[in-house]
Amino acid sequence: MADRLALDGGTPVRATLLPYSRQAVDEDDVQAVAAALRSDWLTTGPLVGAFERAVAEAAGAAHAVAVSSGTAALHAAVSAAGIGPGDEVVLTPLTFVASANAVLYCGGVPVFADVRPDTLTLDPDAAEARITGRTKALLPVDFAGQPCDADRFDAVARARGLTVIQDSAHSLGGEYRGRRVGSLADLTTFSFHPAKLVTTGEGGAVTTSRDDLAARLRRFRNHGFDTDFRERQARGEVYSPMVELGFNYRLTDLQCALGLSQLAKAEGFLKRRTQIAERYLAALADVPAVSAPAVDPAVRHGWHIFPVLLDLERLSADRRTVVAALRAENIGAAVHYVPAYWHPYYEGLGYRRGLCPRAEAAFERLVTLPIFAAMTDADVDDVLAALRKILGCYAR
Image (cartoon, rainbow, N blue to C red):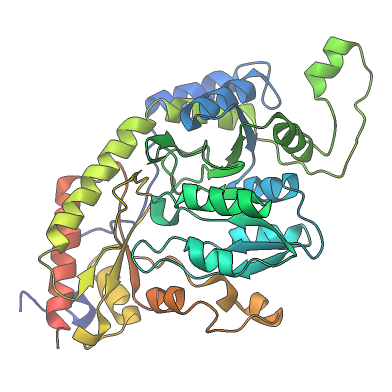
């Protein structure tokens, strides 16, 4: 039977696997890295500063500090915000666990608040309700690439004397009410993992327009030293004083060479991701038992991932079965994200299920469909064909 699911022995929609994401690396990128390899600087060289300036410009911020991963960016930002033992940080549970882990790294306490039912980003009202006398920061996450309600978080933070750390790992290139992501919060973190809009292999950055925070970030990523090698040379100093405890979170010149080459193509990458998302959204309007989170008309979405929500009451299969069926059709479906406090480590800290009902209910229904700049229209058609095939077979 033509409509028999591949999971049940039928013919897959595709002959080869379409991953949920894939980096776009071309010969220009290869040549940029090769040139860095031939240079005098493999790390702590001039390409780091050039990349930081390019990221700051793209984000509309005064400063960008490059680090070794998106997780390192979160750790650096939480530390720069002054989070210490017992300090509370309010954040969404619908995120990669690094967002919450960064708070723990600094001795802080992650306090989870529920998401908006429409966009699945952190609900400002729910976040404000979690604030106590121990709260030091808010940490909204741009889920899937949709910028959070930055003005609301800023207003709450200013009224309460809090710092806003925006986790924008998903939303480089995005905008909120005409302002670029990276310029909206006290500190904004980015990731350059291969699944993101642009990649440095592994890498991240923190943007800020505050000089004091930028200085803290630079010390934190370089062992707590107050100056780097070139600054010491310029001043005739023979050593750099370590003024606080820091880490080796430096990004290399090799990675920054790749990042600079990638940033030059970022707008094209985002335009293509947006085209794919728009095709999905138009097609899903006619597909029963599935919908997509709402897109706030005030934002430019970053489209890091394309999540959909299953209407399980209209299906005879659960989410796990639908994902397995998509993978059998050679569609690389994924799930983003298990609520952070559901992880066994957090359960061991005393967190319990039921804390954020909307996030938990969404997680049970979420499926991530493939989206990346190199996808063709035929690839998109394959995803939609597989989804229609599977939902049709499992329709009640």
